[in-house]
Amino acid sequence: MVVWLRSCLAVAATCLLTSCSGRQSAFNAQAAQSEEIKRILLIFIAVSTVVWAAVMLALLLGLIQRKRPRDQPLDPHDVFERRAGSAILVAGIATTITVLALSVVSYGAQRTVFANDPAAVTVKVIGHQWWWEVQYQADSPHLSFTTANEIRVPVGQPVTAELESADVIHSFWVPSLTGKMDLVTGQQNTVQFTAKSPGVYRGQCAEFCGAQHAHMAFTVTALPPDEYRRWRDHQNQSAPSPSDPLSIRGEQLFRGRGCGLCHTIRGTLAGGQLGPDLTHIASRETIAAGTLPRNSGNLAAWIADPQHIKPGNLMPKMSLRSDELIAILHYLEQLQ
Ligand code: HEC
Ligand SMILES: [Cu+2]
Image (cartoon, rainbow, N blue to C red; front, side):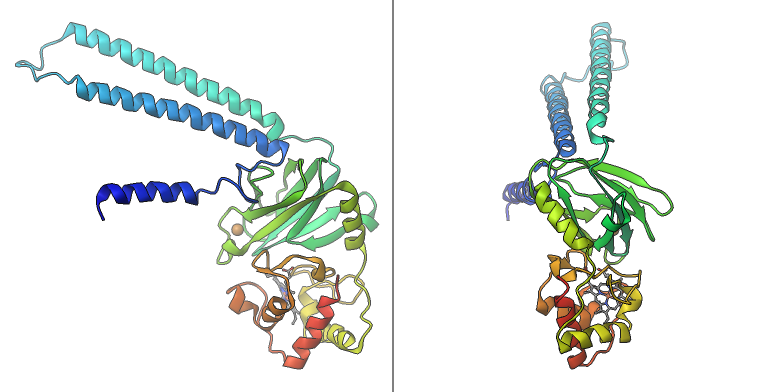
């Protein structure tokens, strides 16, 4: 392929591949914080473009006006040196002004981006290899509950996420809502965002944290406040007791086969802390931190062999008979 065609294709592909919209894009700003980030991003891009164009222009002028070599190149050339000196001075002053101005712009954005208003909702988000534990914290303990990989928030109200890690460093990033913030063991970082419109915004761990880092996604769903309260009150309830024989057997197997050593199902004897809380697993949209949509097929495939779907993840493959798998699956699907 001719070189120029290849170059054009490369440029065109870059334009297509840089996603400038969608539910995981800093250009699709849906919160006060991300709007501010988008604003300074555009200012920086515009200024950098002007600077780049000016440098290219200077280069071009230099090439066009190139002088023929002189006989005595080492002789001082007063006029030229004076002109060069003033050009460098002007360029130096312009650079200083540009850098200072951009610093002021970015400093000004911090008020919004690092807002710390009284929060309507506080969630503690704990990063695990390779999933997100989400603890809703409220003044009254009966309004506090734990879920995983899906955060729901009320629209128009400030939400504070308190970030911690259970193992290595992770990074919390929902481009449509706010900037990145690290989750570090033994330290609490916080980030605040106020979603402006209802919707599902995708987030992603933004700090390489091991083999399955790429499969460590999550969603933030912004809901109208009354819908949010309904969801919260529902999540807050313990799991319903199994009623039909198959799910009763499933519940027994869940504990008997060791699932309950790692997973909590509130209201039952399963109280493990190593894996996601499964009290309302059947109300979630995805499993394994956004890796697969939650449906019977995927759930069964996951329980049968999680290592096939997400190699290296911390849930071991357990050898279950097919009737045991069906009973456990049936039980988990009741956990609305
Ligand atoms: C040694 C601990 C351990 C055991 C035992 C275990 N799990 Fe897990 N489980 C995990 C971990 C860790 C994850 C999260 C994996 C990831 O996404 O990286 C997980 C994820 C899951 C998920 C997906 C949850 C979500 O919200 O994404 C389901 C469902 C599940 N396990 C069911 C089971 C069942 C059923 C059993 C018993 C047959 C079981 N687990 C046994 C640790 C365990
Ligand atoms: Cu990660």
